[in-house]
Amino acid sequence: MDPKVRKTVLRMIPYALYVATATHEGQVAAATITWLSQASFEPPLIMTALKADGFLYSLARAAGKFAVSILGTGQKDMAAAFFKGGQLEDGKLNGYPVEPGPNTQAPLLLDAPAWFEVEITDVVERGDHAVVVGRVVEVGLRTPNPKPLLLSETGWSYGG
Amino acid sequence: MDPKVRKTVLRMIPYALYVATATHEGQVAAATITWLSQASFEPPLIMTALKADGFLYSLARAAGKFAVSILGTGQKDMAAAFFKGGQLEDGKLNGYPVEPGPNTQAPLLLDAPAWFEVEITDVVERGDHAVVVGRVVEVGLRTPNPKPLLLSETGWSYGG
Image (cartoon, rainbow over all chains, first blue to last red; front, side):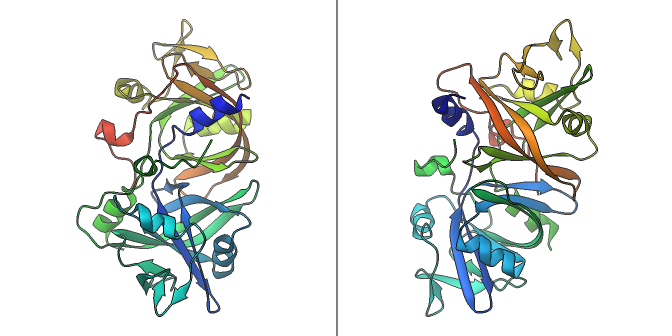
């Protein structure tokens, strides 16, 4: 397989940017993620691929659940702020105001236009990212007509 | 969970349009799909959610592999042509010229700007779509700087 062709082809898949969070036994994890898709209407399932050796995946597994804040167009700085994880201090996550998710208690970013919470049903550990399948148990909208922060808007790439 | 909010939130996730195909014991299946994401760099894995009761999923499972033609911007008609499956006739799939994939023998659309072939490694059968995880074993590019057909371009929605 030609690595250049592989990169060009796989980077055609569109993505948005999200901040995923989890909490368990007093610990909090956060990470910027991109590989995410719906996976079923009924029940409402999503699938996402999380770095297999990352703290977010480890804590989400331990908790059995996690939350996803969907970033909005223009929020590239917020996406970059979670590349190296998340620290909760004075009730803020990496300096951004949060509230606990109703089902997961994981921090939801108040500045993100939308969020959802997931209860993990299945995982597939095969690659450098683990495939995590879960049921969407709650959703929230903070602005009426939200536009996501697309990976294409940022000029970054993740894939290939 | 408010169904309207659920729809608005989950439809923020961006998607492109693909025609997935599989062949096994002389039978051919094809379907337009949208829920697809990369799932690992090494090995190169993708994850997709296929209608659990569909012929494409059934034949891909039987073959253990499938192919994906990535549609390009402007190819909405081609996407619509595979909503109801695929018929191979006179070497054409629903009237579109194809060639067999080198690893899967599944038909690849010659008019689509890019394609890849997948060997299935894992499936999760939990919802109305099955999560299919597989290794990308071959890729191909037919045009130098391809732009995908985004779901947002079509005015359709699939998700929520």
